[in-house]
Length: 316
Image (cartoon, rainbow, N blue to C red; front, side, top):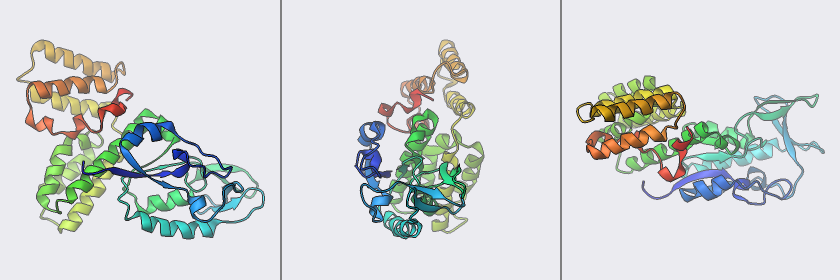
């Protein structure tokens, strides 16, 4: 990694007193755990668009596809004010090199999904997206996003953070210059990681990198980035992880003793039956990579996609 990893975050999640009631919703996992690895760029749409602290609570109303942002009691409409600010904000954020964004769940400005939208009878449907969050995701469709609530799900948490680290590495290699060889090298060390998310897109990317002269370099890089992030957005399931780990095991068919192979196969079966988390067979595979000094696998990001201290694979 070159330098810090910067991600956006709803300011209230960092403990800033910017909510409508003058309080905050500090999330200790975000501040105390992820904060050791990420530099945060805080955003509070309501305050930054000119609203006061404290302020009257607001909600989304009308059509879930194009809701209005209005205050609950006085029915003041702040939609245009919010959208005008958000348009300028996403333009500013383009220069911040963000590798991700954590939104405040349920927020009418920052909720990523399932935000309540009230119809003309005052009945809510969980079909909305916060006005700022929606504009951010449309403007930066390849940047990983999550909500603080969803980070409590081990699978969603691991997937989100994994994507952030991959995007950071991808951004870093481009600083060397956009060259076919640089892209092929990046793809080589990420092959198994991509395969664990989408065998289908993995094959498509293989064809792309096999003929890097088939398109202009800018188009090649843009196409690769889109396919990379679309692949990683798909969850790495138990079956897909098993497929990759059996593939890794094949590199040691001439090295492992009968007992070592039996032990590895038993751990893979235990993982299949959800008796042990992913970190258990991965740890043994990493041991064999070091023991037998397997050069190709030593470089594979699949075996070490993010800092071990985050313990992300201890729970999936």
